[in-house]
Length: 271
Image (tube, rainbow, N blue to C red; front, side):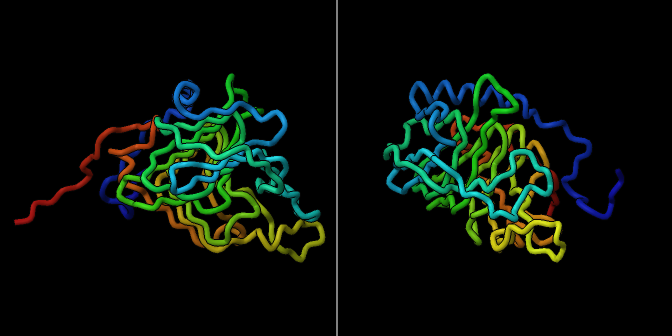
């Protein structure tokens, strides 16, 4: 399409499709490496997944998620979205505090909830099940801040989910996520939680349907259309998406990349 009115520099159309299917190989290798010298946990047979809280002392707390917050009785999946739910933790059990693995790889064959802060750590957290089955693909949820201490490239987090990267119903009103986010088969985003309405046949997920601000510092890789808000003012009113340029030459451990160099899109000789 000829659009001379926008993106006059650096625009390329068409572009090759991203090989999201190929990420399966990356996830399989991450699992192998995590089992060998990283941190690995199989599917939680008595829970709904795991919560990881990262700490600045190069450790993390690991919890088993026992139950999720039930949506209000008048809050339902009006948009018919696959996997809809609150994705917000109700009860959990502490499993232990663990040192950050030397190779920076944490792999869970289950859903994961992640929050916390790192300081001088490079870590990849992945959620996947093998063999791959569309029905059982796990997701990663971030409901509270996930932060760096340094923004010079020393701190790096990546989250790779076989299905979605979620923001749940009970999420921070002002939320910041410092990480490279990858949703292999699903999307990076927030489910639709409908707000107040005058119609007696509509549902109401307030007051958590509307949030104020989300900041994503890193990158987004989403198989399906990403999004943290909807046209009826549900979700995050302000969305700030910031690309972390340190990721190109200092990517997270075992993170799938599509290029290894910057490209010149425009230049001008100044005399």
